[in-house]
Length: 346
Ligand code: NAD
Ligand code: DAU
Image (cartoon, rainbow, N blue to C red):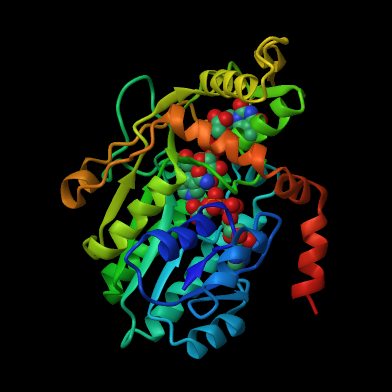
């Protein structure tokens, strides 16, 4: 079972598993289809891998539906992506984050525990944001104390603790990965990179919070998917693994790189540079200054390293968004929400 498989990373993960990995089993994708979940992300996969890919519109907070899916498909492995994932939304309204990220994770853990005779692995996807914020130096390791600063990261921290506790107390077979900022195809255009691509293409203002010098460690989504599958296949039970892209960058520099790539790709480098669209706006409350990941453990135990460079990953991403303007238009206008209502809501 993959939870949240219709979102950004989940849909890339399912695509990766079926098209590019040695995985031979069947995937049951359960997703509530919130604003961030889009079945269109896997429309081609559903057609091509009909027998091995099944979608169920299920909310992880709905215990009855979870029970039904668990029993119907005799679930024995969970890869848990489903979450409310956007920090700014968690600041405006934390309630859904508490429900989905904490209570939803608890529901899944309970189901796994009550089927422990057949249960093989619960892999929990988490974030580097649980560790808080770094100063100029240093890296997050798996032993860095938790200091979450936003309602989002606090809810993810709570879910990590529950997963860890279920391993210690009930010996549930679990692994956890904490990764840095993902980017790539199918990311909802509220997050920095797709938002900037969208605005830059249309020559709208490019909002940078505060002084624009906050640092993130960017990880190409397919590298992350490979890391998750590696951990699921070879990770030690009860362990946590950090996953990072080895590409620390100030936000302003990322935005400048995107402006230059879009100017070049759209053949408009002779016109005014899109860098002129950069606009400094009010800072995010509690904005973490710097994230940087030390993934030595994953590299040494399982020989994983990220393969995509930031320049090539950003180019691929910009190209994908330029080639998928219909997708972008639909997720922005609510056209796909209407489609979901027609297809999935009774
Ligand atoms: P996303 O917002 O794109 O997708 C989340 C998916 O979960 C959506 O399909 C949504 O419909 C589904 N969902 C939400 N609430 C649900 C519920 N109650 N029941 C069932 N499904 C529900 O998120 P993403 O960026 O793909 O992130 C996936 C996971 O990775 C999350 O757990 C997030 O915390 C973690 N993560 C993300 C990043 C990143 O940079 N995007 C980095 C580190 C960790
Ligand atoms: O580090 C992992 C986390 O990365 C994940 O756990 C989260 O799910 C994911 O959303 C992401 O969180 P961030 O808050 O780092 O990502 P976001 O894209 O929202 O912002 C990246 C940086 O850019 C951050 O410093 C805030 C800044 N920013 C963001 C937006 C949307 C801007 O300056 N302007 C913007 O308009």
